[in-house]
Image (cartoon, rainbow, N blue to C red; front, side, top):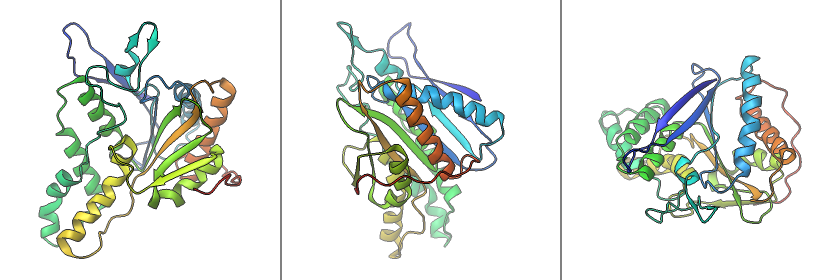
Length: 289
C-alpha cells in the first residue's frame, strides 16, 4: 500500500488540512478503481466500510491478487469533518460558502476537447488513454483558490481517469440504494445485486453537477462534441462507470453491516476484473430500476 497526502489550500493563517489517499495494486495494468467514503462528512457508514476495505485490500495485495490500481479515500472530506457547531458535526455543506460538498464539480469536456482538437482535426481518433491524459491535464488547470475548490480539484484528480468510481454515502433514513447514469446500468446491475440494493435510481443527468456524474458523463459530453464537430457518432465508450452508493441510513452502522458491504464491493471488484478471485453467483435483483 502506498499512502499519498494531498494538502488543501489554506485560507486561514496557521492552519492546514490534507486529504489522504491509499493506493493498492500494480500501476502497470493500466486499470484504476477509486472508492471514496463520506464526501458528505457527517455520513459515517462509508468510513467504516472503508476501514474494512483497507484491511482486505492490504491482504489481497500481499497475496498478489490485485489486477489493477485500487485507490481508497477513507475520509474524503477533511474540510467537512472539521465543521462542528454546538457539538454537532455539519458535513453536508461548506459553512463558508453554503455549497453542497457533492455539487458543482466541473464538466471538463470543453477544455479536454480543445486539447484534443489538433489530433482530431488531423483526422485521428484519440484513444481512451489519450483522452484520459487530456482530462487529467484539464483537471490540473482548475483553480484551487479556496479550501473547497482545492478539495474538489483533488478528488477529481484522483478519479477523472478511472475505469470505476464508487462514491459511498448514506441517507438520513433509508434502505440500501444507489444512483447511476442510464447507459451504465448494465455494468452497475451486478453491484446492485451484490449489495442487495432495494432501489436503483437512474438518470441521464440528475443536475447540480454531482461528483459521480463529473467522472462518468464527461465521456458522453465528449462524444456529443465530436458529433457536433464531425456529424458522426462519437468514438469513445462509456469509459468510466461511476456510482453513488447510499449505505442505508446514518444510524445503520455496525461492523456486521460494514463487513457485509465491504465484501459485496470486493465481489464487484472481482467481477470487474480488479481482483483475482472466484466469481460469486449473483443474487437476484430485488427491484428493477
